[in-house]
Length: 165
Ligand SMILES: [Zn+2]
Image (cartoon, rainbow, N blue to C red; front, side, top):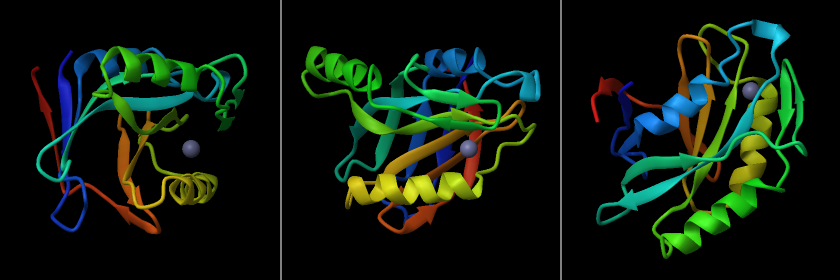
């Protein structure tokens, strides 16, 4: 298993996003390979921000579905319970190094692409995290989708590479 890195142009407040292989291994367990016979999964992405302007992001941890999340084969609603505890623990044990970076969920699609509901939810999330860039990751069955949104603006990657870690 390898890490994955996405590159964004200079207009985006974050230029490089890397997912560590251990994060991708966990996500692989939730991919909806049986399409609508499987529930959508969701959680939060956590990790480090590096660089002078925090322009490099390394996703090192994630939370996974909780019993309190609402999940169907084509819909999810992540609740706060459990996910927040996971973040608090990592934030404390790393002395603030590991922080909230964004949201992930799965889709029953070969090639993941956001739904209208996703865009609406992300706007709400970004209103909450005012002036902070937030990662939104969708795991497809074969191909993933990653965007970064800050306030009202969504940024898409310009380049993607698989790398060994
Ligand atoms: Zn979705």
